[in-house]
Amino acid sequence: MPTLRSRRSPLPVIAAALLLPLAACSSGGDGASEGGGRLRVVMAFPPAQAMSPYGDDAVTLSRLAVIEGLTTLDRNGAPQPALAASWKRDNATTWTFTLRDAVFQDGTEVDADAVVRSLTAAGKASPLPRVLSDTGLRATATGPGTVRIVTEDADPLLPQRLANPSLTILSADAYQGGKVNPAGHATGPFTLTDVKGAVAATLERNADYWGDTAKSPGVDVTFVADGTARANALRTDAVDVAEYVPIAQASLLGDGFVHAFPSARTNGLSLNTARGVFADPAMRAAAREAIDSEALVDGVYEGRADTSQGLLGPGVPWAAKGRTAPTNRAEAAGRDEVAKTKEIVLATYTNRPELPEVATIVQQQLKKRGFTVKQVVRDYAQLEADALAGKFDAFIQARNTLLDTADPVSYLASDFTCDGSFNISQLCDPRVDAAVAEAASLAGTEERHRAEMTAEAAVLGADALVPLVHERFVQGYDDARVEGVALDPMERTLITADTHVG
Image: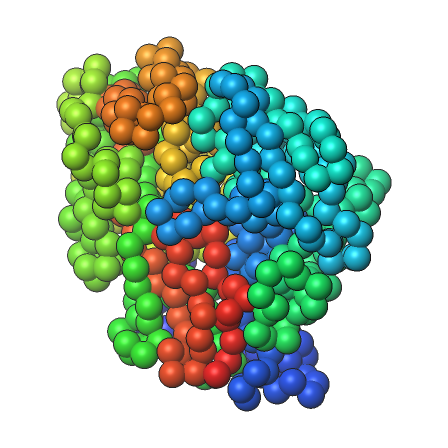
């Protein structure tokens, strides 16, 4: 089992590597720590796909205010204008979007052809962006400033879907040589000008932004997976903003640096339903019965999390009112039967510092039930392909249930349906597929929410995922000095045009 770093270790050696790129990026006349100076930000997840918009790197670009789509979301998840000034639904499958006057960061015009090009490229990407895992769309230009979008099936969530970072709109020069490069070709208030592999990135103010001009002249970004190093960088004034401060570091930093808020994130134990020990529903049920969520909240999160309630936790406030009991659950195998099974491989990643500790406690809980457990802990970029291929028996992940469309139907489709693009549990259950399809077809919000809770009950009944805890986010910055940091439960935004050093 990998050695886990102490939760209250002194400044790690990695912090020295952190300070070098920050110092290099921050040199110059703007002064990182003075009013109006460049922002210094440390992010948790290094680029995994060379800043491609078709994977998780798109979320990083969105959180850094580099990219935009046709729409954006307000704090309640409702769609708002972005590059599209307005839209209307022509019929069940057809929508018309009218564009605002805007230019790309390379000076070319945002027009209907650019929108069609970007949406078409996203639909042809491999792997397909998760937000398109449950639908297909076709975009055509109906004029210089209007775009018609037709979906395969009725999609009442299309305006929310188009706010997803993977459906960003980029200029023609972004698409060269079979690759997609957003650097200098997006529309956000900050322009990505340089990427140093998985180590650092540089952003500059976009003076031609269609909205309010960024208050900061630029952002110097360092990527550091080690959570203790991120917290120490904030503590020692090496950065202005630290993404995802570890729970163990929150009390050490103090209230002036710690900003916790509810999230839509559920940390869960995905069980491989297709092969190995957990292909047996009775073994999955035994694993579920072994989990003690309260022990995780107290032992790992120091009370800064909520005990498991379902796939959708308190960050999705309407879920509790509509929750129903899991359906068609198998009876759990007994301890003696469990003890006869082969060793299982339990994997998780280091980018969220609590997860390795969660894995250790879950490993102990499963062992107590009779399972033999081997643990694998690595950087997320080194694990994702194997997890999606079903090479682990169990996988602990932190998943934002509203990330794709601000409505959990996309999460349910991508994670738990037969054709889902993020189906780590390898679940393929006709009852689940039918329930998710029913929810996706409903335009009425309350009606759709009821159908989504039916789908949740089917997934929980299959024990494809065992909810562990519901996270509360902790972002780090000195609120006496830094203003305008976005505390977004849906994780779309962090740095905005308003973010600056006061």
